[in-house]
Image (cartoon, rainbow over all chains, first blue to last red; front, side, top):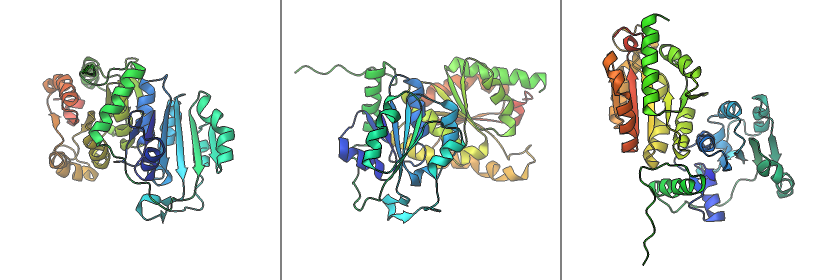
Amino acid sequence: MVITSAGVTSGTWWRTTHDMDRAFYLGASMSMISMFGAGIAMGAPKLPVWVFMGDGAFVMNPGMLMVERDLDLPNLKHFLISNRVYNATGAVPLANAKRNDYAAIARAVGIERVFEVDSLEGLHSQFEKIVLEPGHTFTVLEVEPLREKPGGVPIDDVESKFRFGRYIERTAGIKIFRHPAPDPLNR
Amino acid sequence: MSDRQKEATSLIVEQLVQSGIKLVASLPDDWIAPLIHAIDTDERFKHVPVNREESAIGLCSGAYFGGIPSLALMGASGLMTCVYAITKINYSYHIPLFIFATLRGVIGDPRPHHISNGLYLTKLLDSISLPFLLVEERKTIGRIPAAFKHCQAMNRPEVVIFSEAVLLGEA
């Protein structure tokens, strides 16, 4: 399952995957998706949970890493898309943009599996370690700012809740909603 | 902690158990520190200390999709900082969220830095149509499970706000 943040991560994931069931586009908020993902990961320990946030969201709540380390959820994979700007709002640079060392922050709170990737080759070579080996990971992806915004995600927020929730109910066997999913009508 | 406070704390904890809550994310103010300690040492709960109250909002909202009944436990000031998180996540996506907070800054609370909480907290909650249950008497503690159920049925956040006297076992 994938959770994306406000900013360009949601639009980018949608353009790449067109996934409306396994992805939750938490585009209405910044800085809370790793906690949101952690809540899901706790309840569905056999399902991998990937969260993608930009560094603009991350710097609003870097202390999230303390909670992530405390929880140490083996199925939670946190990806930080670092382009050093607020890409969705005019590509304005972040505070202290050139010096922020997000991987160092993660190591400083005791996260052990921290990865830094600045090329596709690097992502290929480390991908299995990051996502296929069990264990909480924090991965910084250094990228260039997008020149063109990817656009929005064509799904209403409440529809997203039910599509995502029903996917989790089916795959993890968890009861989320009051009523079970209706059987498909046979026509 | 006095015996009366221990009893009040224990009563609140039992109401959480009766509600089916399994996960508690907390950040303290001094009034709820004993309650946090009680939850932390109770094996019936997974207690997660958070770095800021918004993280509790995020964690408990995600826990909803993990099928884990949860509580975000915080002080009045912390709740005041959560308007963004609540209106963006829980209101937009219709995700229920159960919150405990403290009734700071009202008559009986002499701490000047809580004046704004006393003046504005409940007005703020009204202004964003966030239902709340004021627990100013011991007998109201028994309504916690009903408040939790209401929260789940409405698919919206709901807050239970405790007076100091109730938490001390003096009301």
